[in-house]
Structure formats: structure tokens, C-alpha cells
Image (cartoon, rainbow, N blue to C red; front, side, top):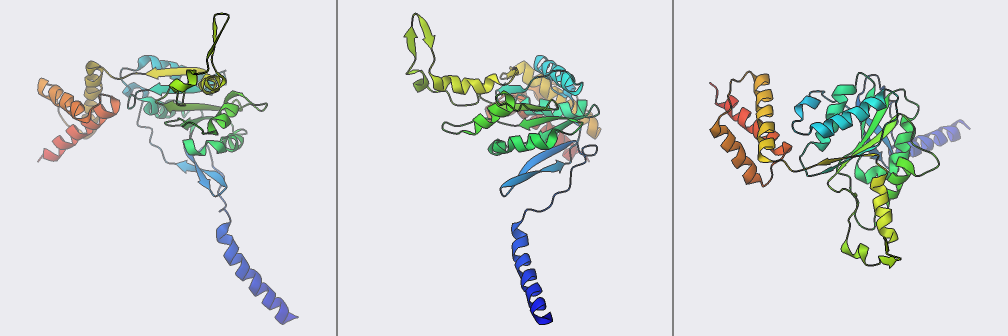
Amino acid sequence: MDAELKAFLQRAEALLSRVEPLLPAQRPVLDWTQSLAARWVRDGRTGYLLPLKVELDLRLDDLIGIDRQRDLLSANTRQFVSGLPANHVLLWGSRGTGKSSLIRALLAEHAVAGLRLIEIERDHLADLPRVVELLAEQPQCFVVFCDDLSFEAGEGDYRVLKSVLDGSLERAPENVLLYATSNRRHLVPERQSDNDNWQMVDGELHPNEAVEDKIALSDRFGLWLSFYPFSQEHYLNVVRHWIGSLAAQAGLDWEWSEALEKDAIRWATARGNRNGRCAYQYARQWVGTRLLAQP
């Protein structure tokens, strides 16, 4: 019997050694008093929240020329962390105009009040109900952030998003809001063929059901913030701000000049766009070049 038991245990250990790598690893429970942000990571058929190390160096005051959008989003977030009614937010518009940066800056502004940020990729939105379930019983307030959100024709994941936002019997908990950025106002492609089946009935236009289904998704966001391409003056103001900020951090003496202004314009022209991201990249290049040239 001892020999049979020993053989059985050996076979069991061999089987476990083969099966264990296939099992999901046990993840520690996040301590939200220490972690300010996390990312939802897929792991096989399930997923987990991976804590992120974030630096709170981007402030709302660093975002120049989008005062209205900044004030509206900040007010909505203050309502949220104060336990007051607040809305899901869609930030849409031109690329590089500060949509994602504005959300990251909110964390520095409201982390002390209990705000936490959760990143989720657009391809993982089917897991959103699971993410919400993990956050529901926590005392902190969570903004689930999906960057560059959009859907192609034929994709059905947006219906999961609709249900979580405001379309199912089980509503999202009061301590969870969704903030999303997109280059599309309605998040899904709108084609001319969508209008082919419109009919005139007693002088009233009735859009076809496919169009209604698409528009219904963006309607779930209570607050829409629009971002537009920068004017040249706006672009140069952002360049000036970031050069001043980066130069101050490095102890670099500098002054604004006509030559510097023309160089910043040439930089934007060569890149084919004029936005906040381009301005920040130019400022880094300019300050870095001057620091490298110092003896």
C-alpha cells in the first residue's frame, strides 16, 4: 500500500506541475489607499487590475486655451468626488488637443479627495461589467478611462458599453463614471448609405433604425466636450508655456523671440499639424537642444 500511495502521489504531483501553468495566477487585492491608478489587463478568459505608478506632475493649469472644457470637466469631477450627481463624459474632437491630458490632470487635482483612475482598452470593453463589479464596494470614486474610443461597422461591443452606461436593469454604481476620448462624435462610422431608407411621413423625417442605434451610444454620455484644431496663436501660447515650464525645471535661462516663434511655426508646418502635442514635443526638443549645448 505504501508503494501504491507513493506512486499515486508522484503521479498527482506530475499532473499538478503540468496543470498549474494553465491556471490564472493569484493576484493580490489592490490597496486603493496606496494605488491611485490601475489598468485592466486580460489574462486568458478573465482579467485583473494592474496597479500603475503614476506621477502627478501634469496640472490643469498646464492645459492652455481649453478653459471651457477644463472648467466643465473639473466641475463634473468635483461633483463626483463630493458624492453629488455627475455625468459620464465624452471628449471628442481633433487629435492632440488635450483630451487625454485633461483626464490625467484630473487625477493630480482630485486624488486627495478620493479620485482613482482605471484605464481600459477599447478591445476589452466586454469586460467592463466585471471591472465595475470589482469597484462597486470600494469607498473611493473611480473614473474608468477609455482612450481613443471608436467602433467599426459590424462590431457589437458598443452595446455592452450602452448597457453599462445607462441601459440595463442593473445600473452602474454611484462611485463609477466613464470618461472616454474619441475623434468621432458618435463613436461609430456614419455612412451615406445610412440615409438610404429614410422615409417622408406626413412631412416628418423618420431616420432608419440603424442610425438611431448608432446615435444612442453617444447619447448615453451626459456631458459632451468638443475640442477643435488650434489657431496659430493658440499653438504658440502652448509652446511658450511648455518651454517656460521645462526651462524652469532645468534651470535654463531663455526668452521668447521672433526667431523662436518662427522656428516653432516651421516645426508645426513640417509635421502637418498644429496642436498641443506638437507644441509639447517642440518645447522638449528646443529645451533639450539648449541644455545639450551648454558647457
